[in-house]
Length: 311
Image 1 (tube, rainbow, N blue to C red):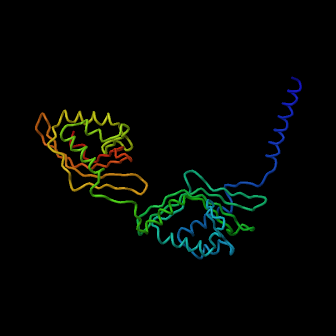
Image 2 (image 1 turned 135 degrees about the vertical axis):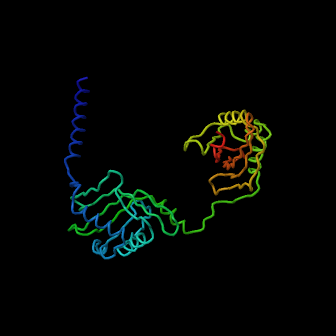
Image 3 (image 1 turned 30 degrees about the vertical axis):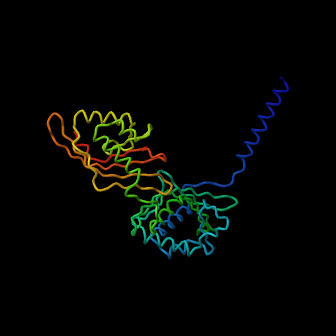
């Protein structure tokens, strides 16, 4: 027992010494106010308005900018001229272009003993393309590595969501995302579902859905869904108040077979009802969206209509 106590004491002493050693060696200082932060702000202002002259004075001759999240080991980065051209493009192509701090964040100036002064920012890149209307709004964190005298920017490291900018570049292309069918077995499934409802056969109507199918309604709060059993009860309650006159296809449905992203049938209908106690006629324009699984069963329904007409 005595040996165990001694060993425990020695281990605690050793770990304490290691922890003390780790904290002892300072590697620099952090500032929330610093001339480098002012330099970064001046750069950002010039970058947003595409000010070539100011940018050229703020960047060193050997300046280079990198995507800090890039995986290309041979990436040479962007030189000063390429970065300035990038600034001119964004300033002329985007409406409302701005780079602002993210939430309550603020930049830090880090004066490292070994690697000089770094300015770290936590920003949001925002702008709407004048040609396509695409909105870019994405977090973008940046690290500015300054020259030895701290008067210019030598390296810029940016961290951002490359998928957002990839999607932006696709807006200038014609990109197919699947095939549209005017007639298809999935369209017939929707027709069977609606026609069986018109005939009052709720069993056949809801056989077209999976047991786990989710239903949503444009008149309900956003994101709220309900189950097949709940949907069936709502329809049953509706039919206790209204008689169905007809459920008529309007135009023709479309089946969208997406490239790797599932299957959706879009359909448009005119639903005609008569209120049982008053004889009042109600005509609903109904748009339905149905998603399908690989077995041809409906997994999700979204209904768009004016619910006030049924109140």
